[in-house]
Length: 462
Image 1: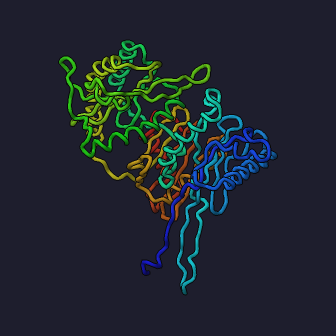
Image 2: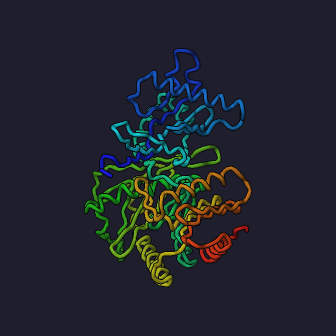
Image 3: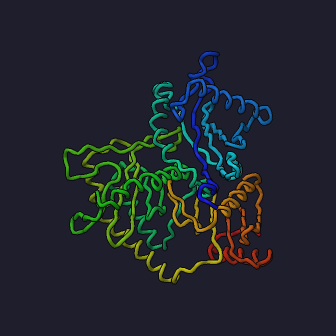
């Protein structure tokens, strides 16, 4: 087939994203006041009002059938619309174009377009607005929304989204008890020596080891660190700029530590710095804190980073104290973790292509693990299985979401792969088996062996 006659595939794309509050423009002629944010911004005003009005009508219509559970999504041939109400009367709406295939026709006829309506997995976004309105009215809220979502929407890569984005989990780094106690002792010493620090999170190679935050707060912070902050700082390092491989001397100890937020150069007295403010859950609502992210990396070890949340504005003296205290200790800890990681890999032997690949998620502690993803970032998703198999995983997950009971689903794919989904006690396990001639009983036994070897301390109901 000539190149001009080949099929063209189009991935999902964001058509619009807007936030509105129907109580801000209740009367005729004031409809535009409802709109707090709209992307793309160059859309004509009447079209914005029309689209928001349509969403209001859909939400009100669905309330007739279920007053306590308003609409979550609307599926059409070309698009999908997702509705989310994070606070009373504040609505976030995202409109996504379905993937499509453009097939050429003979005799010069226009190409046929087929929309892949079942290819998108649902993802929703969170946010809070009441505090901004209380602090500075609707105008301040609009400014904050413009500032945040203008940058955030540029980081959305819908073509890379899959089951892990649905879970929004956390990848944990497994450690032996002795090393874990060393890290716990390190956190305790730092929080005792620097009383301004209220919470600490310890990560190694984008995997979480220790956290003092509530789970929901840590989930949001983890996503920000691993998909935004860390990649942003690794790019200049790979290009040879701002290299972290120049050690500093603290006392008799060498350390490779530096700040990812705050001061870029502690030796420059004129350098200005600031720490980003974040909000975490508190008994009376939300608590405003400053985010300190400190990282060590040297030629013989991988990246280890620690995030601190402090309650007041931070001075240069505080940063120098933190650098001299944390830098050497974190360098030694990173070396210990790296050594253990090397030993574990040596014990496990050379890597072989397994007959199965899996994704695991625990709703209770947000732990996730995947042997399917070779690389997963905000912009790139490299998986070791065909997209059709990933779609089956998504379909099984949708089935699990509809029921509260434990459940098991086994699917034979067209490519002779077996796909198994297992939901048990707030845990979900998805397995892809490459056993062409296996039968249902053999597949079930293979999944049991996988659970016994990979999850021997986790109880899955049969």
